[in-house]
Length: 183
Image (tube, rainbow, N blue to C red; front, side, top):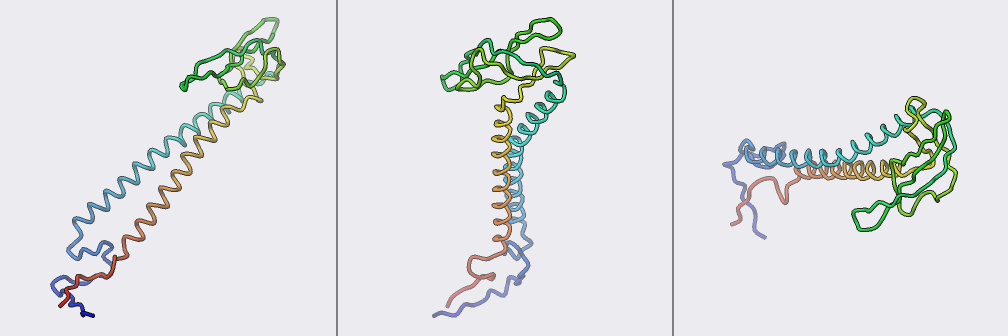
């Protein structure tokens, strides 16, 4: 086996995370690029988490505003064409409040229809704005919040783990820390 000759023109620095021994100007650029890629990935993932939080907070706000409990009848399941060519069904509720009859469509739709026509459903309305409703048994928005939050959270976790692994392995040389010549 040939013995290596250590190149004495480049000082050995075991703490140089990139193994450049020349101030690391090129590798500082590489480090910035890695950090930028990680930040972009985190920003992309955080969009999913932000959407989930906004949807959840909006649902909780509606739940807090709608305090008057009523029993409504599903008078219709409006078909709505979905992006994949199928149909989702939006329930339309009919109820009486303060001797006035209201017909209000839900904010969500599902496929298959969550409620059947003629079914009695417990819901809450906003006493100041009787057309604003909250249907506790309609969990479509909660499921969407969980899906978006889960996608964003898991993606952020994976991106962070990968980033940490890349940073830790950056300090480990492929074979040895010094340049070698064989004779």
